[in-house]
Length: 55
Image 1: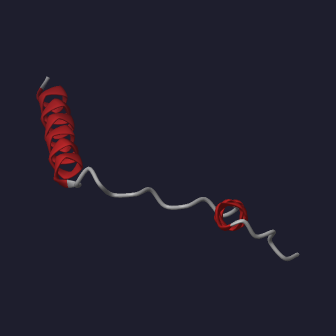
Image 2 (image 1 turned 180 degrees about the vertical axis):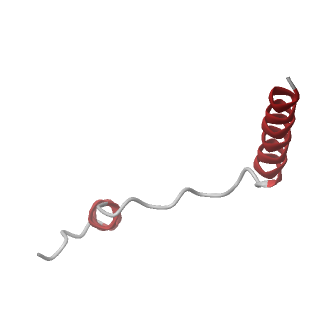
């Protein structure tokens, strides 16, 4: 019974810490790019400038 109480207390504490950390992250953080996004981003940037990308 005591072990169950301790596990519950640990889980609740971990949950509260995670919620506090998530709340501290500002909302304007941009996510990291995935590995294949550089080529796609360059294509979009070149298209926006009206230039064909060189291959």
